[in-house]
Structure formats: structure tokens, C-alpha cells
Amino acid sequence: MSVSIPKTEIANLQKVADAYDWFDPAIDYILREVLQATPMMGNRRSWEFAMIYLALHCHGALKQDSRGLGLGVGTERLIYALANVAGSLSVTDLYGMADGWKGVQTTNPQELLRKKAPWQVDFDRITAHAMDMREITYPDETFDFAWSTGSFEHIGGDADFDRHLAEVHRVLKPGGIYAFTTVVNFGRETNRIPHNYYFHPAHFADILSRSPLEPLPEFDCSVRINGLNRPTPERSENYMFSAGASIIHPIVALRRGVINNANLAVLRKTENTSARTKVVGFDETSKWLHTQAQTFVKRLWNEPQMLRVDARGGALVTQPEFFGDGKAVFQVGFMTSSIKAKIELVSRQIGYPVNPKVEKTVDASSHLATIDFTPESDRIYMVRISGPQSMLANDIVVRAMHR
Image (tube, rainbow, N blue to C red; front, top):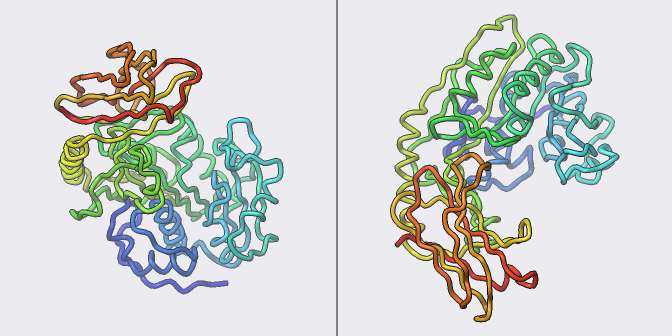
């Protein structure tokens, strides 16, 4: 069936998420009527779904005789929305593969999609296959459009990104569209976390520009100055506010010292294989976001914050935290005064989850232990607690604050 969508007021769809996007008439309509979801400010995944759908719609890809390819899409809601407006969909992910995501582990992806359907869908239009995004096992010029939601950053390194885009180019028909979302950061360089990149916009633009697909001319990295666009923690449950995970959704997230945001890329298969995309709005936006993040971090640690404690690798650990400048302290409280435990202050460089460094070690023999330290602005910090095997996360209270 065809869908009549209000005209969008977003001039350039190749952009990062902005609070104002939720008020766009086309985005609001897609969220409510197409995805049948309640619009929630800051829910970046819903923004990604709506932006991909809008990009495909605006480029004329959604027709009753069009054939679409979903890449790394699991059982996402967008599959079922697109199935209502396209002729057929081939849906792929690492279904059943050893290194696939836990949520899509199945030997029968077709049946999994049926079970997860949020509404009635003609499944004769959908086929599901286990497939690596770097090796698309379809013939040349098979699809009118392709899409991917938040999977691009997980497929490897630069050679893998290049290989993937070359494969998408191969299987798209001339004029075909590829719309996909990923994550960019507002730091100095790409965070090359294995299989979880946070792209610097300049690096991401280079990847798009050297692909055989033609990107839109500009990549807009600006967000407007608005309180809803201020960086805030990605996971409130790390501060013992588990209910916040369902009600607080940052648009621009602050995760372990990295300011990041979702973005959409729109590429077309044309004969113009030398087209480049220009990053716009990054410098001004980055400056404002970093100022806001610094203010938030100071306010956060001005008061003691309770931290979540998890069991990992035979020890109890907190999540790595960014403290900015100044002096800070971890306080570890034990429910019993007869405890014997080793507490380590561990740090690592922001954006690189390798080569952790033990900064301090304290042997705890009473109900309260403290570790004072002077954080560095390019590192994140956590505590690791080793003790009796009977010691549980619920037996410990960890707080942190600025001195």
C-alpha cells in the first residue's frame, strides 16, 4: 500500500540527530502512523527508523514493485513498516552465526521474524537469511534500495567498511539508494573500539567519499542550541536509577567521556564515483557540546553518586566513569566489618577499551575504604574489588564524587 507522508522541513537528511527533528511533520507522522510508536524525545533508535524510512520515501524507493535489502537488521520494527510499502524484502543479519548478536540467535530466522511481528504482515514479501554484511550473497543489481540501522559501526575496521559499501554498490540497481545509520563522536578522532566504532565525522565522510556510491553533498553535524541537545549520560542505571532507562533518552549522549550522536547517511548508485561529501557544522557544535558536557560533569560529581556494581571476571566492578578535571574519590562500603578485600583503582584512555592501568591498590579490612585520586581529562576510572567468593554485588556500596 502507498503512504501519504507530510512534507519534511529537514533540508538535508544526511545529518546527526537534533531535538527539533522530533517536531518535523514527516518524522512525527512516520513515528505515529507508520511505525505505530509513541514519539519519545531522545529515543535515538526511533529517530533512526524514521529517518531511514523518510530518506527512502523522499528518493522514491518505496514502491509496490521495489525490492529492498535489510543489512544487520535483526527483527527491528522498520522491517515490518517497509514490508507494507515495498514489493519484497530480503532481511539479513548474523542469525545463528557464532559471532552474531544474542537477540537474533536462531536457526530459523523466518520464523523468528514471524514471532516478533508487531502487526499483521504479508510474509510472502519477506525472506530472511543469515549473512555477513561484508559478503552479500546476492547477484549484481538485484535491489532497488538497501538499509541498515546501527550496524555499520560493528562490522570491523576501515577495510571492512570499504568492502561492505562496495558490496552494497554491487547488488544495487543503477539509481538504487542505500540509507543507513551509525554513530559519530564529537572528539578529536574516531574511537576505534573493536567492532564498535564511534566515527569522527571527517573520518566517516572519507569512508563515504571513497566508496563507489555517491553520498549527498553535505554531512550536517550541527545541533541547535537547546537544552534537549545537551550531552547527558547514556545509561542512568549506572547511577542506580534503573527506571531512568525507560524514561530518559539522551539525543546527544555522554558515554565514558565520549560525546556521541546518531547520524544518517544517504548514498545512491550513480556513475559519479568520485563524489565527496563535506562535513558542515562540526566545529561550532563540538565547542558548544563540550562546554555543556564539562558543566554537566561538574554538577554530577559535586554530590556523591551511587554506582552500580557488577560481577565480572571473578571480581566486582563499577562502570568506567569520566570525572573531568579536579580531585575525586571512590568510597567503597561493605555490609560487614569483617571483610578482607583488595580494591583497585583502574583507568584507561577514553575511547579505547584496551591496556587498562591499575593506578592504586587498597587493602580493605573495615566496613569503609576510600581511594583519592586526581583524574586526567583523557582517561576514565573504575574500581575493581576482589575478595571472598561469597562476596556479592549487593554486599557492597560504591560512591564517587569530586573532592
